[in-house]
Amino acid sequence: MSSDTYINQLRTILDDDCLLTDQTSLDHYGKDWTNIKQPAPMAIALPKTTEQVQKLVLWGNENQVAIVPSGGRTGLSGGAVAANGELVVALDKMNKILGFNAGSQQIHCQAGTITQQIQQYADEQGLYYPVDFASSGSSQIGGNIATNAGGIKVIRYGMTRDWVQGLTVVTGKGDILELNKGLIKNATGYDLRHLFIGSEGTLGIITEAALKLTRKPANLTVLLLAIPNLDSLMPILQQFQKALDLTAFEFFSDEALEKVMAHHSLPCPVEQRAPYYCLLEFDASSEDILNDALSEFENGLNDELILDGVMSQSQQQVEELWKYREFISETISGRKPYKNDVSVTPEKITDFLTAVNDIVAKDYPDFEVIWFGHIGDGNLHLNILAPEDMPYEEFTRACEQVNPKIFGLLQEMGGSISAEHGVGLLKKPYLNYSRSETEIGYLKAIKQSFDPNGIMNPGKVID
Image (cartoon, rainbow, N blue to C red; front, side, top):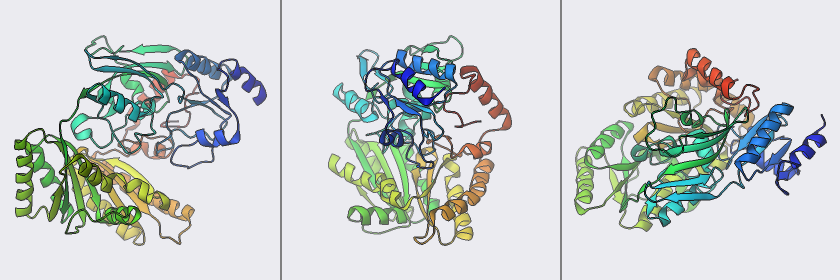
């Protein structure tokens, strides 16, 4: 059947102006932040209801046309790439908050709702949606759920999975499922909701979600610490965790700090520069908690775990100090870094960092390594920058050659090749470093059950 016939059929499913075929739209909606392939989708569908999504999936099955679900396209694993004539189903027009229950502190929204919109709505209700990351202003909640997004506050609040109390989904077969229906307690067998959380659009399309909210922190306070070496990381984390309920424990290298200061014309946050830095955030709801934080800071200085530090004195200073961590990705993006988003259990962080630094220094001494991450939950972001005069394709091939060494370390340490960005296209060749062949067999069986014709985001996660 011709593409024109397909387009005409799709127009009967969607409202006017909800099917895009111009080249600008195809390019925009057919890729994510990876830019790893030239986008080449058939068309962009912008449904407004779950029923329209269902009709699109049924149409895809009938015509054996692959479907790529699309949220905010802020992913870094190629999960939203459409390069082979697929139909992109973008949830941009499904962006409404459908309801709020004050008694259960639960919000009901469509999957295309922007994360920041949910955070702002929660704030208006005197509550808090704590899953937060740099792309919260453009990422969509459906995409967050489909990748089980984490971010900067996982140490206190957990991953997206921990906040999802119900889902409406359209399976790869075209069935509409209401999963868990917003219930807090439900002991009726398999919880299919959790199969769709982290499924990266390979089982179906999430169209609505019920999310729980929580109380707002009373007085978020930030400590930025300069530390002499990697061996200081875990002792500092352990000491502060005993004294405080941390909402974040971040880490970055001096190379990262230098680039952020230069790019954004920011002053150095501490008097004494150091090889590495920690950023701690906690809810200082009383004077006693502040005193405990200062006491641990002094202990760290006395034990030579900490060289210098600064504590925020206002909400404005909290935001200023966070810039040194949150601006890193944006700052280095122009250099097209080769990224690895990995995790190990926190007690193995120091050994892993040291081992990877040794590998890169030995095999690629001309490459620049930029480290940052969420140390409190074991998630590290390894960014490798090429020499200015090295062709990007050559640089990428070199990084791919070192991947097996890094992922081999992760395998030995029981870690994950993808902590929060998903598997998508980029990490699929390395999935066996984190999942056994038996596990992958079960994943394929689950995929076959929900998507027997293989039309949902084919080629992502598993073959």
